[in-house]
Length: 292
View 1 (cartoon, rainbow, N blue to C red):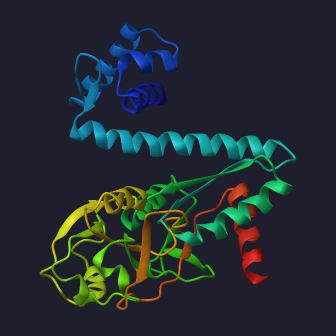
View 2 (view 1 turned 180 degrees about the vertical axis):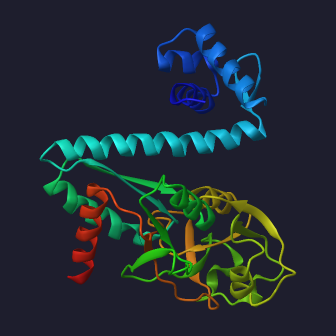
């Protein structure tokens, strides 16, 4: 399995089509099909199912797609670092896996300062839940992770960011609970709830709902924007972090959830792993921004 075959497979997986992937890679479709078949033979497993105008990844194919993204991302990072080392100007990509939070502004504002001095540095933010961020960080495809959960301090360095996060209830302005100034867990009993997929059936959910396990979800979301569409169309009430949805001129509103803990974001990175020059510059800029 080489980088060329991984690149071919990833293009097909992202395009969901062999013909479009072949156009992207500037190769013929028979050539692409042959390379993918050779990759399947080498791995001894089927990676995708071909339909008339598209392809569908198998479970193994989906796993390889995730790993191919990590591997090719590392290769690109290595090329950027080596290229930057040959040049006077620091350049390269700084990749951060981040939970959804309004306080991501802290990261982007630091990036603005970095690019004023080093325009060759690019900031990449990948949305992901806690498990996905740690997995990518451990595999080396991310420089940093932005998390709300505690981490093992023997494995990770961390930097606490300013600002606080709390959970609120997102609802339509004409919803029955919209006349409340705040929402208690018992107010949600019997109400259709829309919950984050990674939050459902966790200790955090027990805390937010104060042990009211008889509550059943009407919908699950991965990104709160999709959850807000469910709320807007009347599917139910969403529990989400505050300030993620712009409410001005919107049919939606929020109310504080009394059981929500106050949470603080932390930027984390692998202890004992050497950061690239671009990542080191970014971290120093962020630390300076927080101090002031």
